[in-house]
Image 1 (cartoon, rainbow, N blue to C red):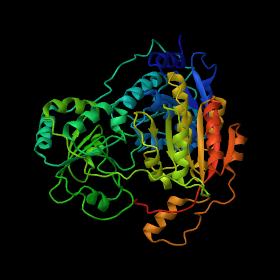
Image 2: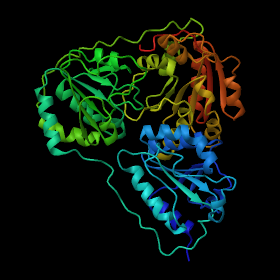
Image 3: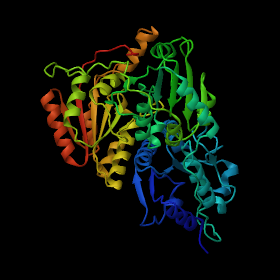
Image 4: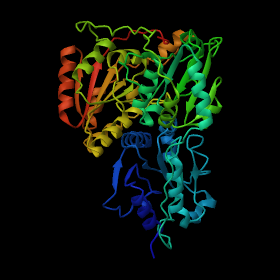
Length: 534
């Protein structure tokens, strides 16, 4: 008779899910014993990095990845990156071992008490099978839940003694729809309102990138000759940033957003929340007389929007359905003037963020992947390295540090697996660097082509900027003296360098990009603060 493990692994083969990213524990070893040769196990040294690596791989490969962490303790370590994966809408199948069923009532050491509640609300579905024979079918349901829009992580708690139980018959592999189509009547209504508008503006979000709808989004904007603003805190780039209609990024607070939208009678938001606000700056949600239409693949996102009328749809299917209903408008100049990126003085030390990013830009090959977790200098990054190709830029949707370093490793693994082989360059703040530093080990061991550029200003600059905005002086713990980032990278086996001058950074970048492995470059930057709202 086949075992539960036999049937489960056969199902995972049928679904094409043969990569497991994990950190093994005693309650997971029965699942992992005699690990099949046709499966791949990617080891990370801490569970937050496990989830971040899997998230990057899943986004890069556009399919789910299996995550295996250690019962409740490991799941607790992983929660920060699980929260980010949920807000990233990344399909992951999270698994954790559970104590043997014979002792669950006694709650022995390493029991995950109330296991299905622990990862909520940051998973789409959470389940512990009632009997061992339900494990394969639970994986099938988990897969179906993870890949349907809005995509996201799901969780299975799996008792360690289930795997060797006998099982009759194979598991049934099923397919499910991966996109949600728009209501035709609602599409016609939206088309009529768009056609009736005199000065519309578009706000594009990350769902456009996830839906592979860049070209359709460009066609929609050009048909309306309408400016395109990137939604606040977009974790994926939805529109080419050098396009004549790109108008920059919308600010992240209620009052400033309202001011930015003045003069437009209609806002059409596609693939984004309305809106991702932070910090609180009061004001009206929209200018007087301005309407808003929201297109999202997430019913919850539509329900909680404070203003506007919504339509639930995959972004690409929305564009394809509405474009034939619209008359192409005559060409109109973009009313927003984007200032050219400043040309930094490379002789000034420490280097400014503008200087560092200009040097990174000049060193990058034509095809690359850029990952960002340096919140205090995002504006400088956006103006020095415009993104004009889909699936090129990634960051975290949650605001929680510690995702981007492991995700960069996962994205590099996806680049190798897909054959694209683009180098991954991750710009990381010196504070952010400390959250998931263990992911460097996985990058080195897996020979992932990723370059970490660590920006050292010896402070939590973003928090100092918040302190200015919130008028909270003398907050402790915002300075970070004594960090040796190059030594940390070297300790995990990465190729490392320290750079202070433009020449040193250029040389280090050239060597790291040629290395084809994992590199860490520590570069000192000036600690100058700026206005949090730009």
